[in-house]
Length: 150
Image (cartoon, rainbow, N blue to C red; front, side):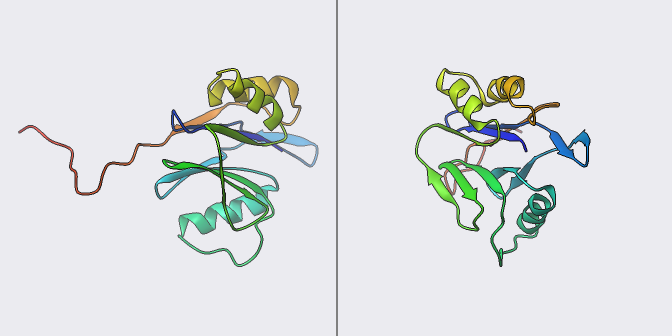
């Protein structure tokens, strides 16, 4: 499967890149930017890609997604567990996927999402490959503009 980990206080999310199937493994990007958020998913690749396609088209879901999605927003971490309805997680960090227990323990001990994925990949045989990490830009207050010097 995979491991995705996020920390709200740093607005960081990280994922491994390994995909396993048909007696072969390869590597892909598992994180996607949405509008004011970043998604990371674990589960069946075809269903995960369908979820990402729908997000990129700003579409709605007409059926259960059957994958585990971690969504990082400026106001919290949200989980989609085989459902189209996100649930906000209490706390500063969370993880999904087969290596999530290792990642959660690592973040509890102060590790970053990237370090949590590195640790999970040591113990979880289906977490591995290069690690991708993204940072969410903090939202600015409405009506405020960035000052520029001429």
